[in-house]
Amino acid sequence: MITNPRLSALYVSDRNRTLEFLTKVLGFELMADVPLNDGGRWVEVRPKGSQTCVVLAAVEPDVLARLRSTVGRMTHGWFDCDDLDATVGDLRARGVTIVVEPQVAPWRENARWAQIAGDDGNLYGLTERGH
Image (cartoon, rainbow, N blue to C red):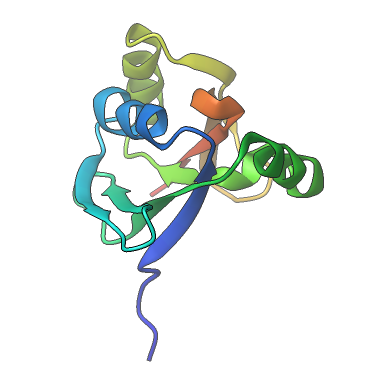
């Protein structure tokens, strides 16, 4: 039986810059940074305490632009928060651009969401689920 998503890929044009944003600004843990035989790198990060990791998949800027034009900028990552207002306040204090202020999520009962801008033009959703 499948119990939990293990990995999700985040397509980026600058792996080092995104790694710094996710670890230094968002507070993710670095789980793996391993050189590959083909000259690439396998880089995994995760929010502290999470079971699911995010793999940073480096692509050329034109590939990233095509992905965004095809599937949109909001498909790159959604993360749960225990306190959305506190998380948004903390990220704002760290210089993160808040694209959408915390508000009711119309697609889920008793949930709120916000949106932040990362590097590489990626947009990330933050969700707080009601209890």
